[in-house]
Image 1 (cartoon, helix red, strand yellow):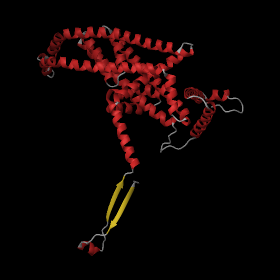
Image 2 (image 1 turned 135 degrees about the vertical axis):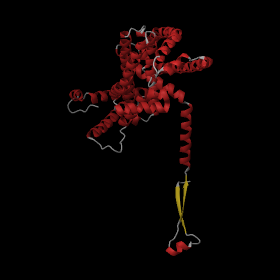
Image 3 (image 1 turned 120 degrees about the horizontal axis):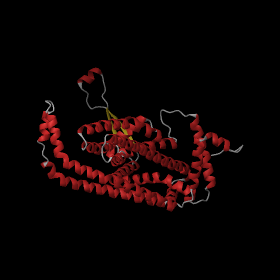
Image 4 (image 1 turned 180 degrees about the vertical axis):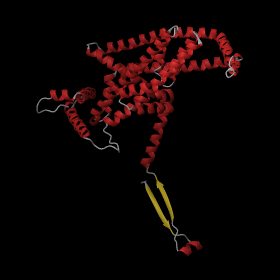
Length: 427
């Protein structure tokens, strides 16, 4: 049934005296909407797709993390391949190195943190009594001192076991998803050529060049994001180590490593890095703890307002305002995971708008846009010529080769012009 809007004008059976006095005619308009079968099927499919996305959200999240791991590992594996190391051996070396590094970090940080927390809990009553006595000497803080002196932990202890059990289940679930993402990333890297060939087989050949450029740019985005994470984590680790060492706090190296690891997490990373450092400083003196707290909070504010927008903005080619807006939006929509994936997603959206040559309403076509379209046509012509009668897996490799050459020429235009033979155009 076709879509239609039917308007029916009908004269009223009787007119009111007021209408007759003014000689007016009232019109009754009926609007009827009819949905075609195609529109209804589309709406049903969209609804089913959204339902599947919601139900499969954990699976999609595992896939996203696996692709993030693949994008992080791929440059190192390619570097090893360029030095005549077999791909399988390179993958094994990289994953083994990451596993050993993770075990070393956990071994370095967890035991010392547990020991410090245990010591703090043992000394907590004496420290609370001393702090309550100090606050009681001042009129404004005397109520707080009385509250600390009379503080009881009965209610907290009654629910501690239940809370610990709930958190342990949650941690086990996160660990299971993390292991699934790691193994999925491993399988994706091992079966790279077959998976890439299958992807190119289901995509029309007219879009293979653009698809290859999108894949290259995704790898660049992931690498830039990981580099940004490493820079910010190393900076807060170094700052924490110097601060705690200067204040004479024990286990400064372990706490600095923990702060660097926690800094990866948006929003709560700052609290996770500040908390253990302040608790460790409390074991020395309250004054030291206050100094550490103030300086750590100042650094966290500096990192979130200055370092993160500049470092990630430069690495991902995003404006500082877009970086902050993306982090807030991702955190509101999906919590911690959304904030963690917000910057790569924002960079990917902007990259897709650029690579798919989407014409935005407020932009006018520039000379560079015309040159890009000409380059796209030349690259597609070369791809069609070189892949005639070639299987999808080999065609994918050719498409990536052409895209790599063109990306190099775009980033080094002077070298590309010098390397072009006279009378020939280089893609």
